[in-house]
Image (cartoon, rainbow, N blue to C red):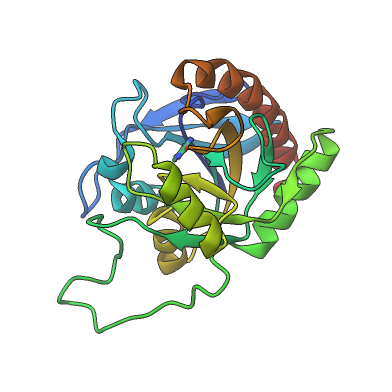
Length: 247
Ligand code: HPA
């Protein structure tokens, strides 16, 4: 079954025919909210709003372990994460959609593994390619079917937030090889890998990163809402196609 984790601007899915809402408890505490189960294009889907349905949970306080655990416990096998980002690389301006293929993790202090308990022997997962390639390809195909241009690839820098970055930090991220920056991509992707979920992301560029493009004097937060709203409508179209193709 397909799971969708919605980020800022996507706290519900208008195209989801809701059948039930499930409050799930996990060994790691409470997920960001109830899981919304339903159908898109007749296919079963489970949806979770990463920041809570009222958008009250900041990126560094999201219980990523509980969220991923809950989706896995509900028999999700595949996960699409929808995440807003700032665009660093030229060409990744506001309104651009991307399916990143790499991650650099700058977060700290987050509970980032299922393998920290003493009842586990030390466990490592391979994370050379942090996203599930099968899901990346399905996303790219769904975008094409939906008639939406989407950038195939790019490196996602996960920052701690909740503040935005300094211009110098963005310069450093670019030197490191990052193309876009967001606050929620990690540890979500690593936890999905640890638990065996096929996970990929749609990154939605909602602003130029600090010091770039029209953010050269600062990021105009007031503009983000409108950009996000129209971009998320396009994301919903892609998710429709993705669900329709889901086995
Ligand atoms: N930086 C970090 N996270 C973000 C940004 C940004 O510029 N825009 C949306 N999420």
